[in-house]
Length: 572
Image (cartoon, rainbow, N blue to C red; front, top):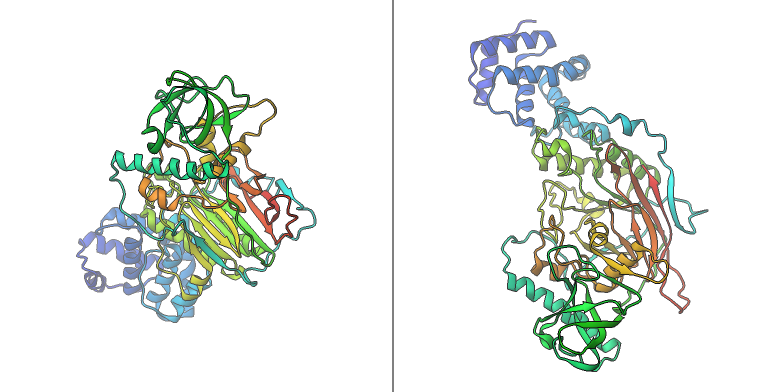
């Protein structure tokens, strides 16, 4: 075929590119080799440069263009494309859009629209578009335990683990205390007195309710000597910078009764206790000198209950990132999860971040060729379009490990402006943490690994067998906070004024989802079913996800019952 160097140069000048003669000659060779006309080749080249964020046209860029796109895809597709349409440029832009779907602007044509809407999840999420090393994980693909149920809860036997794909009456509502976090906010400028104010409010609020619940007449100031037993209100702290132990416990008093004073606590007389820094407690004991409290009793914090409304039986699927293995960026685990969603058609899917993990090797080493946000949007679009046929409602919860998102706690919801009108009815973006009502059933959702954080700081003593996970969950529920630990872990950037408004637990949830690096489990704690679904990947191997079956129960009046009647944790 005949190719005009002059026309190639004119096509490039349309996009403001003036090339050296050697580069024009190279383009002529590529046109002849791959059967492209001048307009089609330049269209492909510009689309490639746009999608890979390459500035200018050099010999290195042309080499990348040839090896990363032309030799892999165009040589196979050009014959069928030319037969289907006489407009090679439009068809070729569609083919590169399949490879780089998140960053190419092309004229709206029926062919372009049809190509995008019918692509499979594998076509939507092409790792080669944002990573030079997109080799699938051998360990993950060679796993033999896929679909294995690793733990169950309730009457899982006989349950048909298949939802109605949102066909029933599904009512989702984000709950706030007093309002829900819906957008970004200014952070990174906190004054120590403001943090102290928030912590003081927390002590006083819980103290006031405990005082009323236990009919306590008055709290004694921490430093007031007394020969009789006294009742003190305060917050657990540590007397040094080290880890809390039974010899380093101090009680920090509230402002009203103790002016924020501190006193060491002797735990030797307590047979059972479970304490962590930041925990609000009422202690009874002897303080004869005003310099040390010998604790003899700990009051349990009272927790208000939610009320479950009448609702249809509902299936909920829960999964937490990372959605790639540590040795690959191919998102194969996510594509497998999408296949599960399309097969089981759950009514609601709750998906926790990270979707692009800040701890992934290719992210840490800056090996990706596209902006983090573009990769995230491609991942998001793959989930939304890939599960559209299932009809499931999708709930997205961000993570502090989502590399493109704001790393502050509480974390605002993801922003995604490309949703269609129909998708807006099915797709929900919530904050981290979040209280979510699904047909009146209250879900507590957090992607922060509070189990790991609290477990590392808690000290306990028990006369019998004590379940560590249940103790930690009991603390979370009774302290009425999604993050009661203070001071927080070093990698937690907490904005305490926002935390006070958006990270509280006004009532005990019916179901609490808290993914963790610790072992998966499902437990009933204080009438709340607490679920650690694990992560979808664990290093180089596949991880787990969870599914729950909820329906209304007739209360027997004796104790609180969660509407979660069955749950399973399953290997991907």
